[in-house]
Amino acid sequence: MPYESQLALSLSPYVAGEQPKGRTFIKLNTNENPYPPSPRVGKALNGLAESLRLYPDMEATGLKEAIAKVNGLSPDQVFCGNGSDEVLAFAFAAFFAGKRLLAPDVTYSFYPVYAQLFGVHYETVPLREDYSVDVDGLMQGAPVALANPNAPTGIFLPLPEIRKLAEHCRKNDAVLLVDEAYAAFAPETAVSLLKEFDNLLIVCTFSKSHALAGMRVGYALGNLRLIDALRRVRDSFNSYPVDRLAQAAAEAAVLDTEYTEQSTRRIVAARDKCREALLEAGIQVLPSATNFLFVRADETDAAPVQQALRNEGILVRHFTAPRLKPWLRVTVGTEEDMEKVTEALIRLILGK
Ligand SMILES: *Cc1c(COP(=O)(O)O)cnc(C)c1O
Image (cartoon, rainbow, N blue to C red):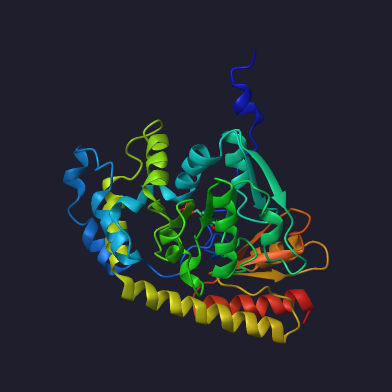
């Protein structure tokens, strides 16, 4: 008998983008925000050291109230976790364990990993020819998980499509999980649908739009019954997933809506400018409603272009799945970063 459980031996863990040490790179490989968090975050963290002898508030009351206020919801429609990755994991355990679950074939690559961990029968539906999510294909009477905007394509599914899917899922007593990690960069969010659908769970993160990837805070929005199921899973695993520093930082960040809107606008403008320049040069770039661009860097395999960029000090993400191989995912950085990566991409892809 091996030391490890059958479960541990059977897992194929998620592989995160590189966090380099030593050399300084222009880091456009993990969709972090190029700007610092709101200045209110530093102020909120000042002087908290002493309070760390006490366990945090397990319900993260202040943070939940702040998230509820900004989203026009009630605090008991909010659940907070240690990054949205943890919230997603709890959701997979709470709503999908032992069930069939449908997801687009191209989406956040953590979903199949959670599915494996929690015994979810994970089935994929191919994206359409234009890389958009095939909503009709996902309507098979089973629960659905998807990212909107989708990752790593960046493509956004309009609200009527989400509503159609939510309706279909509800008719089948199934939860629709919409991962809105990038919704701040998109034209709209599905939050307004929460009034209509008790089977809709929206998962969000502070890592991208609020520049707090290093703090690990994410949350879910949904009706009381769904929130309660998440709480049951949390309290069967770790009652205190969001520490005192994280609660204070995230609360300050979410309430500074003006700051977030400003940095988001800046990122969106840099994104659109880079996409236009690449398109004009004749390079294919999918439409993006996120803080990254999905760029076709080769006919067959973009790995050499990724390596060439790395040699020039620019990190971007490459995926090895057959359909994704010709593409690179380029996080939108500062205006200066984007000028450099735009020039380098045109030169390396077109050889000029
Ligand atoms: C980044 C990302 C997450 C994870 O966010 P954390 O809060 O940092 O765990 C979840 N879903 C998608 C689609 C993401 O891109």
